[in-house]
Image (cartoon, rainbow, N blue to C red; front, side):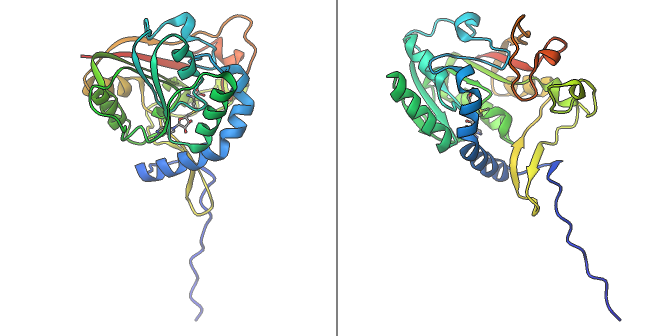
Length: 273
Ligand SMILES: C[S@@+](CC[C@H](N)C(=O)[O-])C[C@H]1O[C@@H](n2cnc3c(N)ncnc32)[C@H](O)[C@@H]1O
């Protein structure tokens, strides 16, 4: 008698499932190394070489001043990409270090520093294990870097708290958590709630063997607040930038259509107790 053979089904290309820190880190490193050229080609002009842009809504630190007066402050930019924010901070008189997991992104940071003549120290490292001593910085910041891509974001909060001086600030932007109830679509299809806000399983793109190639993590607003508080921070502000009149540029799922109706970015402004 011929036994039925188990069929090996290909893993779905896109899914929601839990992943380990190691899987998340490996996927992020591969993804951002491979995507660095495309990311900078697509968004580099919008981000500018020496601008600090918090989000696709175009909010600039020059206008928002979420970090306060940065002159003379020691600042770490996490998940810096091409490090344009770090160069803006350096131009404001800050003593800044920029770090990223991806060598591909840091290559763009080096090129942009050469192009602009604004050098900033660059470091390849993981936000889960910051290679700095305790009490090193006055401010840590990131625009969409690291936080959305790590499985264990509580450890990132603790690491940031460790390297900050008491009273120091931690300011980070992420996709607004409520966006997770919608499809990742800038058009009409992205206006209908189709997923549970409370489903914390990450979004995973994977190959046919189930090896993650892109991983993005979801936490609710309350989760983020609790992570901050548990690490010793006091939340000073939660900025939800509105879509500006006349801003027509679409960035992935961020569009004027959706931006008019609900927030796309959340910026957490926290101080260490
Ligand atoms: C969406 S990009 C943002 C880059 C830049 N901040 C900007 O505004 O263009 C996310 C960045 O986070 C970095 N990243 C992802 N996981 C990281 C980790 N665990 N530690 C440090 N950086 C990480 C990526 O390499 C990538 O450069």
